[in-house]
Amino acid sequence: MKTLEEMVKESKDVRELKRALGVKMVKVGVRPNQIAEILNVSEQFISKWKGKYEREGVQGLQLGYQGSQSYLSQDEKAQVVSWIENQAQISVEQLREHLEKEYEVIYRSKQSYYALLQAGGMSYHRSTVANPKRDEAQVLEKREAIKKKWQNTRRKSSEGR
Image 1: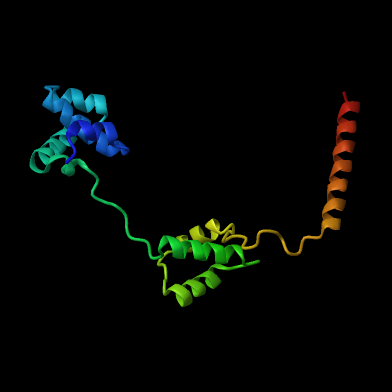
Image 2: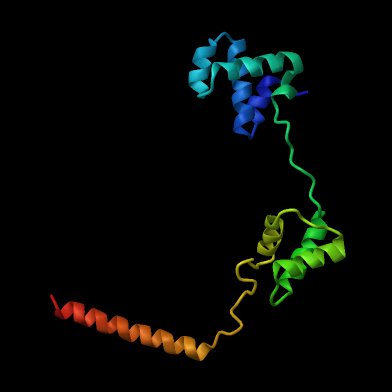
């Protein structure tokens, strides 16, 4: 079981740290209004976490929410990302169908699909790595035209001085 001092030293979350520091300061005799000012919290915050510490110990100060379990295991996610990387072009709908067919997974939010696409090097805005209609010759012509306009603009601005 962790002690209050260990929690202060090891805590990576600011909320847990403030709770532990508040309780620790109360235990050493610092007044709640001073603690509230130092930690930028309310006196009710100090009172709440002091009471919870007295009832439950250090576990009472820790965050309760640990997140939800992923629909896909790490191996399955790696397989999906690899599958996405091997696609020349993919839409969110195609990804959804693949996940439903292969893994029996349907996400409620499109954000989950977007995250998978991003992990696979794709984007839900632009689902191809490169523009398939890009013509290198046209790109080079356009670059040259821009350079000429830029040089003409620079000459005109220097002549006007």
